[in-house]
Image 1 (cartoon, helix red, strand yellow):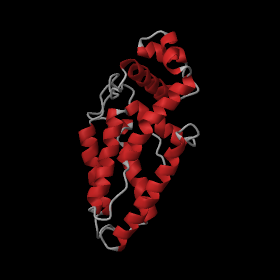
Image 2 (tube, helix red, strand yellow):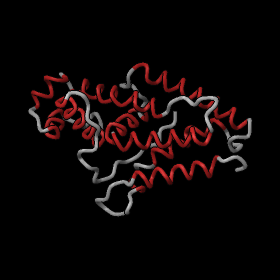
Image 3 (cartoon, helix red, strand yellow):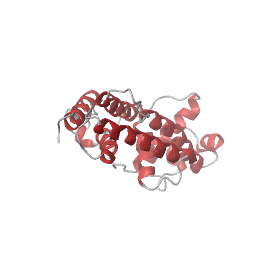
Image 4 (cartoon, rainbow, N blue to C red):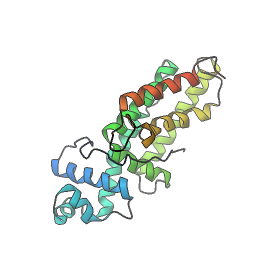
Length: 215
């Protein structure tokens, strides 16, 4: 599995994670996502999560019992969304539209859950030991199904004649690159990411590279 590492912007907005059902759990998980994204699992302390959540440390422990439980819940919340963003292609999909849809869905996920997304991708890059058990299996199955469909599209001339094994990693890399610092618009310290521009640019790169007739 190829996962392209990325960095969060130095000035990421604080209130950019989507709300969850329980307000207190949501506050804790959003704070934890930010802490884990910025510092990693090992370096993050419960007291730091509590400070970011503006809650007593005892409240955080009441809801989750341990840092490991919080981390697991962050992964369990974001993993299904990542699978949904990379949903299997259908045989009657228009190839370029299907691939563009995947890029757009992934960027929207990064936009809505930037910290949790980084936590998941960082965990994948490190081997995924703490990721929910069925995630990697489902991810591998989806990747195999989609690669098989891409191979059919290439064989029928609906996509450029490229190695089908390279297409999905390229799609994921294009999407993940959109939240790297180089995508800031306008460029400059303290500016946020323009996801609309990033999405349009990514889709254009994808279409130009995979359109039939390209080599």
